Amino acid sequence: MLLECGELALCTSIDKIPSLKPLETIRDLHLSTCQVLGVEPAVQAEVEQLLSNLQQLLIGISIMQDLTNRARDSLVSFGERMSTRIFASYLRQHGVPAQQFDAPEIGVTTTDDFGNADIIYEQTLPAVRAALRQQPGGPRQVQVVTGFLGKAMLSSAITTLGRGGSDLTATLIGAALELKEVQVWKDVDGVLTSDPRMVPNTLPVTELTYDEATELAFFGAQVLHPLAMQPAIRSESMDVRVKNSYNRQAAGTIISKSRDMRCSLVTSLVVKNNVTLVDIVSSRMLGQYGFLANVFEVFRANQVSVDVVATSEVSLSLSLDPKKSWSDGEVCRGNQVR
Image (cartoon, rainbow, N blue to C red; front, side, top):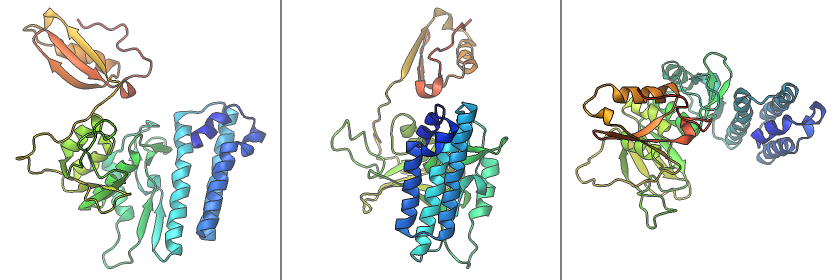
């Protein structure tokens, strides 16, 4: 709905921005939620200020007639920033000490790749640790942090972490605070042996290693995004447990650095759709050096990501993921392998 506001702002005059239907819906939803939950007056004032800032951003988009990726990231951030404030206030109103934090303001630093920014761990981990660590013996509180947001290192603008950004934020905070375990709550009983929409009677996988979870996520498992495993891999000691919000008694899947593989034959089967397969056949490969280097230089020059590679003496087969490989539908135009 926030992005819909941005699209509509491109074709709406400045004076009509406040009456955009999705903007009115967003405003009514958040203000009525504040009333129903009985949030503190100061928090409601913050929510109203954020709604005003959102409207000003839409006016700017209307004036400039341009909806950049930077503006899109700023737009989608408003939902997280308002909802976390409301939730933290609700907890306090019910006797639970809680404090809200905006991830960009506690040191989550990223590249300036708006829409799919990468975390700069060397700066982020110590900053988040300093901002969120609670002193031993001091007052304890629930820390409510916005998900999937960061601050661009060069421009200091708000960025988003792309798909799986909320899971990544959770594991990032866990790694920064050197926690033993981070729990990620989903709508299934953990990582499953296959896709239940395709295979009946699937079962949860009780244990996975970091590498297994990353591979399964990368090649089609929808439960956890592969990027969410990066902080755990960096920490080498933090477990990630996938639990089911609708079945809290289920053990879920525990993901750790290592596990006993002696009795493991097949962990899980996954399917990845819309994969592009490229076959390269050439007798010039036979006994020659540098051929593969030339092939992959073409992909590198065109910023095309290669997933899987298989080779023989005279052929090379590889798969590409169009969603993250290229945007103009053309691969390696005008390039030849010499």
